[in-house]
Structure formats: C-alpha cells, structure tokens
Length: 143
Image (cartoon, rainbow, N blue to C red):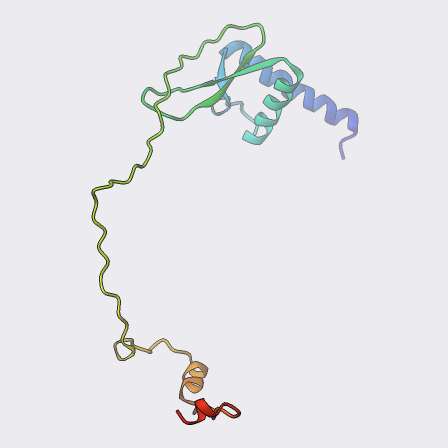
C-alpha cells in the first residue's frame, strides 16, 4: 500500500507531466490532451488542480466554423492564446408556424375493435365476474 508521501509524489509527477504538455503544445482543450499511461479522468483532475492553483488559465473557444459548441481551452498563465476560435453560430430556435392548421382525427373507441389477446388471465377473470348489486341506493337498484 502506498504511503501518503508516495501518493503525493505521484500526484506532483502527474501535474508536472500535464503542465509540461501545455508548455510544449501551448493552448489545448481537455480533449486534446493525450498522455500515455494516463486515463482521461486523471488528466482532467490534473487540469482542474492546475487551474485552481492558478498555473493554468482558460477561455471558451469554438473550434469549428459554423458550430455552436464551445469548449474550455487551457494554457499556461504567462502564454498567449494559440487556438483559433470561430464565431459561435446562434442556436436554432423552433418557432411554430401560426398558419398551420391542426387537424385531429376522430378517435372514437369501440370495445369490439380492441383485441384482448394480450390480456392476463386474472384480468379476464375479473372482467367476466358479475357486478355486485347496488345495496342502499334505491335509484341505482331500479336501473
């Protein structure tokens, strides 16, 4: 089992590798950072720690022309931005057509048209039981 000092040393080593990546490759988004032997979650955690410590700065960039998706791009605090960012396209809004005529089909339901092939046996049994008489309600007993 690793001691606390060994775990701290390993964490610092990961932070140094991620920071070295940003020094060499300049500005990058999280998805652009690929380091052998490191999982995505390890890289994202290291980037978060470097950002919170003030060693990295971030900005929102749109990497593709004609896209509305923006991602966070990170760089070392004293470096200049290097990623080309495009203008974000406005999101498409759904505007209903006021001239559209809504039509509704007649949805009458006839019980004889409904097949009861998927009916469970106990449902069929309950459906075929005779109704109990209405006791205490003279107006319903006469019906």
